[in-house]
Length: 311
Length: 290
Image 1 (cartoon, rainbow over the protein chains, first blue to last red):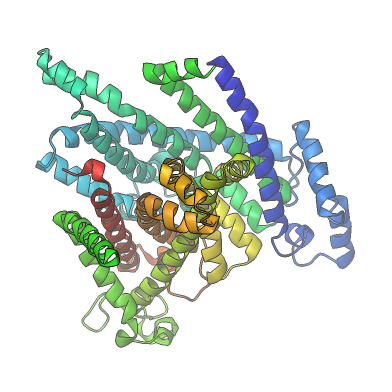
Image 2: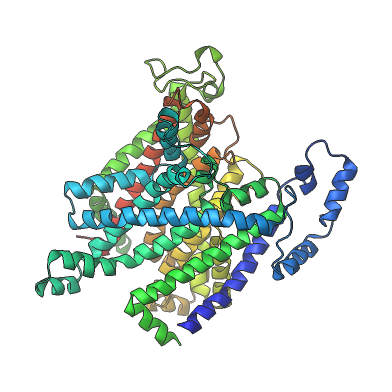
């Protein structure tokens, strides 16, 4: 197991280098030069040239890339062109926000999705199945910004119960959370349902029933445990996506998270911001997926046995 | 003779899939909803030209739904129904072409990776790992920023960002076929690699690609709308659904219809296609046949 984890950690290095190269090429292809974004419209030509020289913009592209990577090896993420703040410091503010948002949204969607999914699988074709399932299908097709806007309309414009933006108080997170839970919860619910439906038709469930276990024990102890594996994987995957991909919700509710940070960097050709942001994001994502696989091995003896065989 | 036999066999297979597909009520509902969306997208000009949908008419601004303006009008007095149906056109064209492009790229990459194996395969799969290490919407935004904002570049960006999932699925499906004897036999008979991939591997690995392709279209509709909402999609004043909602959000307190209708359009379009996708999955996947 430890050997496997180490192997996975080593495999992350080429992927991260690949990500850095890809993003470096992309952000450097954004039209315009960094100085015109950083200094604004009323900068003189000399100022622009001086700024571009100070960040090494006139060096050839490979040289710039190697310089950046050399600094990165010392965990020096550089300084933002626009805000002139060290990227490391900015990341230490944005990353926790993104982690909190992603974590609560996933926890909430599991809390809603798993029980509803189990219920609808057990009572298949009854009203308890049809209503949640059709709601989940509709929610999965709704754009997140639209749901967020409707929540905003109801709770902050009509009733003024909750503010529509900002992160000053914990309850200010409620509306963006509701938006994300609606979307990811319906995703988790549909997954739980289909995985549960497959599991309760397995022979070992019939065996448990034949032994005379009560229905509650059959469903919640035996079936759910087995059905949960794809749900855990999806939760891990969704967590990774939410870390940097909740851009729309972040923008709508003005949450200063990682996704918005990177997108603003892309728009302003702020190379250190985009590079630092994406590399951190990709590394976090890889760690989450590795953690999911490890949890998997603990939850499922079959998977654990496979790792043993591998070495 | 054999040709005819093969043909009837193929026909009956398609018929069987269609029978299974339409047995599902949800899939049939999906087809009906999609037909409605497609009808308005194709015949949008019968209700008013594209120019009408982008021309401002301040005299008629902020009207609520009426017999004359079914969905009401927006802050520039443009008819929202007209904007929504022209938006259907834009949304369908972009999401279909992006989906097709990513399916083609991913299938080529995945099938050649499975067929040739070795260094080429590991290089290809590592490349896909790199692409999928960043969330798709973020990657698509980076591509659009690098390529410049236009509809074509938007399609390319969204397609490239989604290619890894197709590559993995196509490779997985192809791997189950590559080791089989008929492939070996074809190779021994001197069949070219291209012909083997196209005639022997592709048909056998097609089902999962089609399922992913359909599912992908509805995610593309949502992503396209999200990118327009962020101002990174189809350039204004094109009546893209996400852009309509983005423009309406400042007025939604007093005129919620401006937000409701385009949002419902997105839901109906995305929902219809994902229902069709689910139906296709059940119809094509014999494991789930009941």
